[in-house]
Image (tube, rainbow, N blue to C red; front, side, top):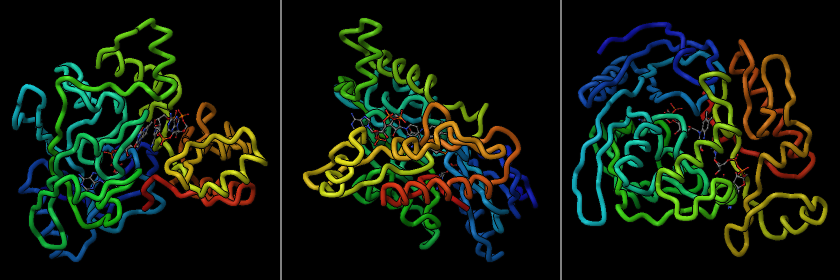
Amino acid sequence: MQISTNTSLKPYHSFASDEHAKFFTNIINEQDVVAVSNWAKENNTPILIIGSGTNMLFTTNFNGLVAKMEIMGIKKITETASDVILEVGAGENWHHFVMYCVHKGWGGLENLSLIPGTVGASPIQNIGAYGVEVEACINSVTAFDLLNGAFTTLKNEACLFKYRSSLFKQQPNRYIITSIQFQLKKQPILKTDYGVIRDVLHEKNIKNPSLADISNAIIQIRSNKLPDPSKIGNAGSFFKNPTISIDKYNLLKENFPGLIAYPISDIEYKIAAGWLIETCGWKGVKKGNVGCYEKQALVIVSYGIISGKEVYDFSAEIIQTVFEKFDIQLEREVNVY
Ligand code: FAD
Ligand code: NAP
């Protein structure tokens, strides 16, 4: 294991601000994970795992060891007439893995096409898009438990998956995820009920879509609406969609008939945070090199050299104005350091 010191994090995260890590290393196998754990213990240093850095904001230098996850490999564990189980290294690129499954005809992850990041980060916030969350295809997650100093395999139920959350998000410094077992379907039931997917399939006159049709539709929708993090710095949706009670929803709907919201149970509604931010007038607003993306207000973008602190302060202003107008407290989805 090679450790560098005072390393710029700029190349390693998608806001590309120039904060530094006191120590930096790469993890390419399980032995490296153990070495990282031992080294951090001996040097009394916190560890931060980084995948592709597409869901992180550094507001200051990291006074510890940043370890970049690069464990690779896709291995078939079992295959039956209906299912395939694959074990995938945490450092694999998420979209490449989804494309691999789509080309093989194994369904379940196609709606999650073009999400940036690594496979290992996918369970952390239980990545989701277009009506699907990754938890639906995860059998188990293997991780090194820094608390117990040993590898452990957590079955799906033990991962405590929720909307944009999991055990790993709730206990952020405890686990280093090394591989994941996914279960995919050979005769998948396609999820096309999310409005825009139906619209694109209709436009293309596709009546019986294949996995590849769904994946291509999603790639098209995302490419038109979301900024490419390799060109414009961003970390996707900066805030979570808030959940409010039905009573509060009814009151808001009366005052703001255009409110975009979806029922999530008999007593709660999920509100589109992008709509709240846009209604406060933020869409397309730029302050210095930080801005609210002109095609989706939920995404904060950088248009040049920025510091993470500037992005954080910009997001704090958004939270404040949304609270003043709607009495709703937005929560950041991005992991802030
Ligand atoms: P990182 O940003 O590197 O890390 C995220 C967090 O996970 C950090 O806390 C990190 O310490 C931890 N972590 C990472 N890897 C490990 C590991 N192996 N073990 C332990 N901890 C680890 N998200 C969605 O849910 N749905 C979307 O549709 C979506 N669209 C996006 C679109 C854009 C344009 C962008 C920029 C982001 C989007 N995201 C989306 C957010 C992001 O892509 C996901 O959260 C993704 O899973 C992050 O992967 P990463 O490897 O970049 O994680
Ligand atoms: P959108 O389609 O403009 O929709 C706005 C919000 O309304 C979404 O956040 C979505 O919630 C909700 N929504 C829309 N149609 C819905 C339906 N039929 N049923 C339930 N909820 C519905 O959103 P978008 O920004 O273009 O993003 C499209 C998808 O990609 C969304 O699922 C979004 O979560 C995902 N995405 C996530 C990130 C991220 O960083 N987390 C970034 C970009 C896109 P949900 O978010 O719960 O789906």
